[in-house]
Length: 210
Image (cartoon, rainbow, N blue to C red; front, side):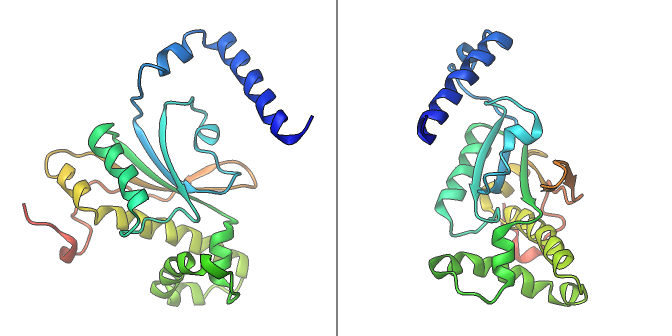
């Protein structure tokens, strides 16, 4: 059996197991989605949102890119966030990075990776902002781990600067934006404690008048 056929067989096996454990599942999700969460994560194949949170398809609306970045000129990302917030009415947005992230490690190096270097520049900016703290960490592994965390935190705050998210906060406490990091070596998620649901903790230059 070739690799593609293995995927198709895996799908058939999954459908069989799901029908056995949740007989109404496919009928239910075919009628629409009402996720409570938007997940902005890394494209890394080892960090699938539903599997690592023990949830079923339909629970989490997902956007993924290299190193879980929130870039204000990224129309793809903004479209996903807009739909999640304005149409699906999600209550929580989770930015989830992971230790051992290849994008973070690439940004820390001085190697040329071609086209992707333009994307990695956004991570290098996070490093530049926190250079004093990172420069005091002698271990490259620990420095990379801390950059993973700082990158997540910066992306959380990048979301707070989005105009339509601030529009939501003017009328409600939602969405709450959270920063998490996943650990590949043991499977556990760490909450970085940077939950935000108002403009109170961001620089006034990013506030929009109502």
